[in-house]
Image 1 (cartoon, one colour):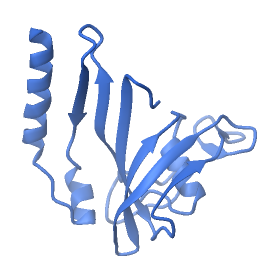
Image 2 (image 1 turned 45 degrees about the horizontal axis):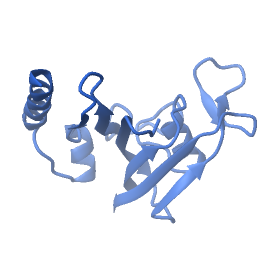
Image 3 (image 1 turned 90 degrees about the horizontal axis):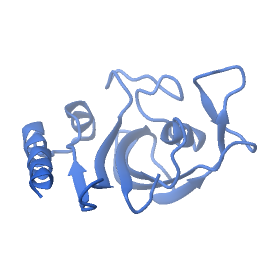
Length: 159
């Protein structure tokens, strides 16, 4: 997942206050027995490595910055649930919430190499309104991000 040509960073709001403010979760992930959807940490699973850092703590929740060293199905969700801090709104691996109607997980940054020009391109998306509201964080409005991505793509096409 993390290599020279493709990287993603995520924000997640999780239940609880983490004792360790940054760390690496290195726990193998496998398909849960008798399920085609769910995954779990299992000794016979595939290597899975998730790096996290606490950005903010509030109301028995934490806002995390997350990056992946591997890319397993449901990796972030499984790992955070495994350490006892499930993503708010994740009904499959942890806890539903009256604060948000979906998983409080957002890919906010993507870095990739343009397939033709080989130029490294960075794209960022602001935190969605429901996550901003719940974490009391202010970011640029969505139109600013859309304009930025359009401008970056236009420039790469011209070259």
